[in-house]
Figure 1 (spheres, rainbow, N blue to C red):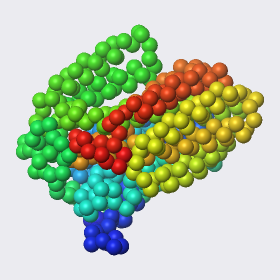
Figure 2: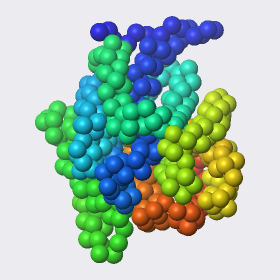
Figure 3: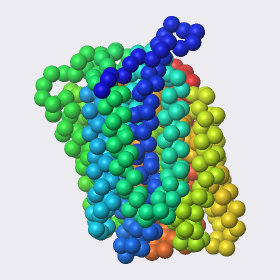
Figure 4: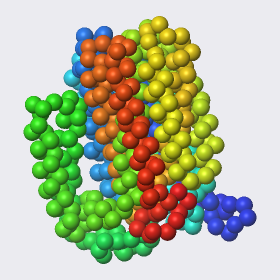
Amino acid sequence: MTDAKAGCPEAGTDKPGFDRGLLPPMLLGSVLNPINSTIIAVALVPIGRALGAPASQTAWLVSALYLATSLGQPVVGRLIDVFGPRRLFLLSTGLVGVAGVVGALAPGLGVLIGARVLLGFGTCAGYPAAMALVRSEAERTGRDSPGGVLTALAVANQTVAVVGPLLGGLLIAVGGWRATFALNVPLAVAAVLLGLLRLPRAKPEAKPTARFTARPTAQSTGGSPPRGSLAARLDLPGMGLFAAMLVSLLLFLMNPHLRDWYLLALAAAAGAAFTARELRAATPFIDLRVLGGNTPLLATYGRALVAYVVSYSFLYGFTQWTEEGFGLTPFHAGLAQIPMFLLATGVSIVSGRSTSVRGKLLLGAVGQITACLVILLLGGDSPLWMLLLVALIFGVPQGLNNLALQNSVYFQADPERTASSAGLLRTFAYIGSMVASAATAASFGQHADTGGLHRLAWVMLGAGLLYLLLTLFDRTLGRTAGTGTRASL
């Protein structure tokens, strides 16, 4: 086991380059979540048939992972900010392997849902750890976005997310739906080994680089965390209140109904208590004074939420319809998304050469709206080329939005809270996915028919229009956290 080694100086400069040895664990760890998020899309119908569960129950396989990950990402991100990525990365990716075994051997839907919860928590560390490593390497090398690593990270995540249904269909054709869970075992083993070999043992010493501060703290002044108990350093009460707020909200979003009004009341009460706690905590879990003054970052989180309502409605809703409403096999349903995979990858690579995000966001919004309008024209007797056309159009926003949102958070977040800010980006994205899951379940009911697809398309279209408006009228684009100066956004 070795610590990460400093990279070689880049051509034409005296500054060291990004340590390329960090890339394998960064990329593999960060894709564990999207691969498990998307691979289940083509497995829902086979699982339902095998276990005798309707679509309204198998939807919990989607919701369980996002519930766990929405809560876990910012919590684990905060732990990474405090303790560094290595230990959290190894513990979390090890849990992914355990979840893979549980899912592959699950006797019923309840245990399978439990395995998805474990997967949610297990995949929490990869992305925040990667963003924290990018930040620490940027500080070490003096390059704000070293070597295009942000682009590589975004391309890897979106590529795996798109190819997930195809891989899932192939695994189901070869080994049944249980193979989609067993896949996590070799992936986790590889991630743990790479983490042991490549990740630095200690978190690099913090530097006083925060772009703004609401009040003096250890994180904002570049000093060591304040002395005291571990609970005080981590703000465990704040984490608990955040968990209560988020779980109550997401449980309501899973199956929104007036009879469950108490969940919204619990979320509001927990939110109020959380706000009061964080405003007076010496080392808050989420520094609301800083976050509240960071309008560009808040706007990015809002865009992420509505963008993922569209993205995951398409991923789960459209994929289920191609199997039940159009008659494709799971493998062919995944194969039908190949055009999206190819175009999204190409778009990300080409657009990743620029850190500007406004153009990416606007073009991504137009792509989402166009695809939703084409979906409204689909029917059970539509020619196959129309399905491929929809997938192709969706490749544009798939390749642009993820990259633009990630770059926005990197430049807008307080550098001392890069990992937790990246975790919050995923949390807002997963809240959007929960809204998408609820909309999909409400639109389809017991069967993914064409009428349900069209109802879902109207929801997607509304979210796509909101995403466009949030981008058109956002005057904060181009400002980094708390500076008011123009960045390359």
